[in-house]
Length: 307
Ligand code: PEP
Ligand code: MG
Image 1: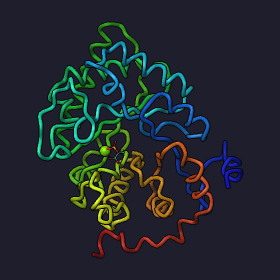
Image 2 (image 1 turned 90 degrees about the horizontal axis):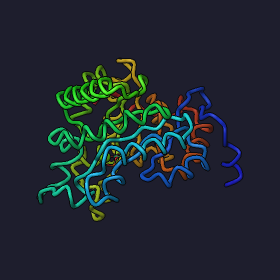
Image 3 (image 1 turned 180 degrees about the horizontal axis):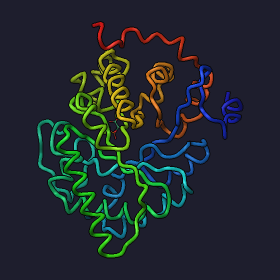
């Protein structure tokens, strides 16, 4: 088995009916980059940037972040790296943030909500990312989006950062892609509008499953209910991909379910453009794609108009 998988290194993931899908890796630490290379990931589909904050005793400086992002981009040698901006709160904490105690932290003050309310934190990260962008192929992704308004606010902050850098004569790539995570039902239902404002969608099925099914992803006693294969979750994905393609942008999946081999065929059939999985799963998913004919996959239950 292992030898079969190793033989897929360097191959593209094209299904029997000719659908190609990009397979990237999810990582949370620069030390994991070696695993991406070893498993021949196309790039990094989700780099969780929280490590920078959780390993520091205080807010990480712009220069510290810049050096870290630069090293990552250089190590990936031109392969695309999608860095997700700060997604702290809920299950992830850093004490110096002094986040208030909340009864429902998963639905509380976290991620993009912190970034938009404390723009100095956000601007520092965005400046560091833009400065690093000249060292490789960078995409920036924003987590926990629930409305068009947030995306418009984010775009204003990005424009401000670019303006600052221009004035300071600091170079940044003009080819950065900007995307959002689709991981709340609210975002899914606004995908027609959101798709006009960004370059890509990445569906976070971990949170999307949690919020769609009103089922805490951390609660092991509910694991039977917490199901990314649930019809409603799959329909959310179908709608998201359809609206992405209508607007001419790509849509991927970066939650754990991207590596669920029982869903690979359906994701292919829906036209998902990219899957981002743990590095150790890259070749397994590629193997699955190569052996799948998406025309044989039954997706009738997903038809949005025949409930
Ligand atoms: C997700 O929610 O699916 C996701 C990829 O992000 P995280 O697991 O970091 O919340
Ligand atoms: Mg998430």
